[in-house]
Image (tube, rainbow, N blue to C red; front, side, top):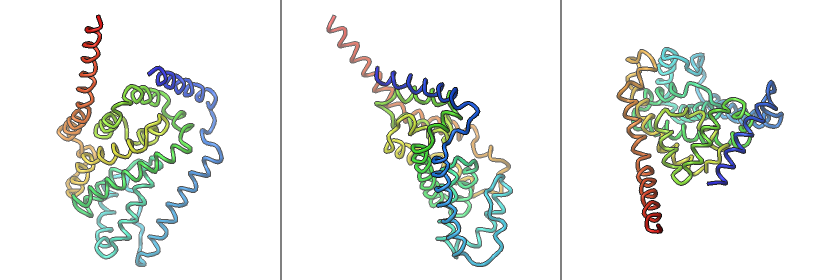
Length: 275
């Protein structure tokens, strides 16, 4: 634990030093910008490939949805292509979702709604969980390569808090990460980009992401089936939905709390016997 504490203080010091040294400077080096640009180019080439295999048509409706109205227009136009060009629509959907997750672009909630509207609950949930996990993993590895200065620059205080919480829960890290994924305690975007910075192993990150995103994906995808009835994105997460997610989150950390309590009791018994 002393080593972990030292590591936390080193990271904290690193945050402060980086903030002081990089104040007013662009946080990424030329090489890091080149890496990010290469990833963007790869996604663009994939989307161009999908576009070239689609029939000649007016695709002016294709844009990232920023409102429910944009999403309904996109859904209405894509419905006619989904049955005849299922593979192209799926590949295009996956590329866009993973791209948005990789570069922390807001709006994936609309993509989840679209999955439910186009593919139904079961296929929609499977698609969203797959693409969200792939996008989070892509963000994880990209952040591992170039993300440190960016995280230090954008979220120094939040990173310090996250580092300290991870350090205290190393023995039950999967439960803690599941709790974060299920509940809105920390934004998923921040978790994706900060996890490699605080040395969370990828297998733990992957399992927590894959399992922990299922409840929220189900809520969103199911709402996408009745897309025309939604008045705002806020309608997705009513009190009942949020309470359910928190209940699931509490269940995920309960075994850890019980285990810690038993360890403390055992330690007290040992001390009593020694005395």
